[in-house]
Length: 282
DNA sequence: CGGGTCGCTCTGTTTACTTCA
DNA sequence: ATTGAAGTAAACAGAGCGACC
Image (tube, rainbow, N blue to C red; front, side):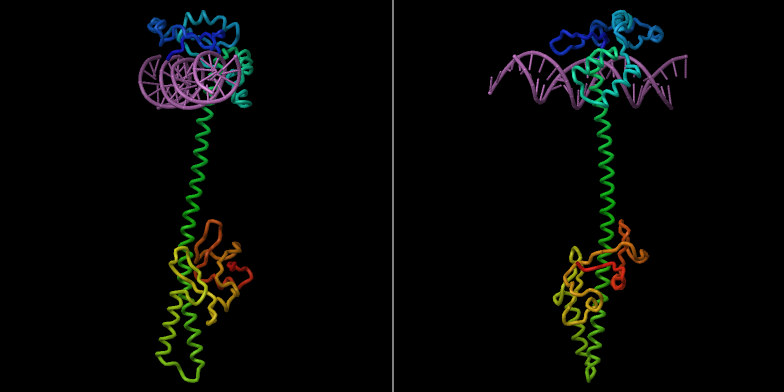
C-alpha cells in the first residue's frame, strides 16, 4: 500500500497516527500517478525533508508528488543508529527528542526503530545459526574421532588377549618341563584346554571389557604368573586403563586421537615399563 | 473483578526506491 | 540509454500484551 501523504495527527487518541491522504492505493490518489510523466518525476524529485521549515513545505510537495516515499538521509540514519546502539527500545521522550533533532515525525522514528529491531533480529538469528552449526560440526568431528578410537581399542583388546593366551601357555609348558618326567600329550592337551576356557569366560580373574563385551582381557590371575603381574601393573586388578602422558609415543603403528595422543595397539605395555608411562591403573 | 482504552511491540506485508546485469 | 529482476528500506496492518481507569 502506498503511504501517500503522511500527516502526523498528534491529537489522535491512539498516540498520533498518520492520516493517509491520496496514496496510490487510496481512492483519492488512484489515477493521479499516470498524470505525472516519468520525466517530471525524475527532474522534480522530492528532496528529503530534514528541518521543521521543510516540513511546513510538505503540503506543497505533497500536492506536486503525493506518492513519493523518501529515504532518510545518511546523517539521519547515522544518528538513529547511534541511538539504537545505546538503546534499542524507544522511550516516548527519546522519540520526541530524536524526531525534533532529525526533522522527522515521531511516528517515523518509531517505525524506523521498529524496522531496525526486525533487521537486528534477523541478523541475530543468522549469527545464532552459524554458531550452532559450528558447534554441531565440532561435535560431529569429536564423535567420529571417538568411533575411530573405539575401533582401535577393540583391536588392542583382541591382540592383547591373544598375546596373553600365548604367554600363559608358555609358562605352563615351562612348569611342566621342570617336572622329572616329561608331560604326556594328554596333559598338554588338558592344559591348553583349561587355559582357553579361562580366557573365554574370564572366570579366573578380573576382566577388562570393551564397551560391548566383544572381547575379554583377564588380568591378575592368582594361580598363574600372568603377564600383567610380571610387568608394572601390581595390585590394580579390576581397574581401568587410563592414559596419563600425551607427550610421547609414535603414531606410526597406532591410532591417533584428536587430542594428539596415540594408542599403540601392539606395545603399550612395553612402553608402560618406562619412566614416561603411557598407561596406569586407576 | 471484568471490560474498555491506550500505548507499545512484533510479525508479516506492501510499496517506493536503488542497484545491477 | 533502457529495462526488468532482485534487494533494501520505509511504512502499514493486525494481533497481542500490560497499564490504567
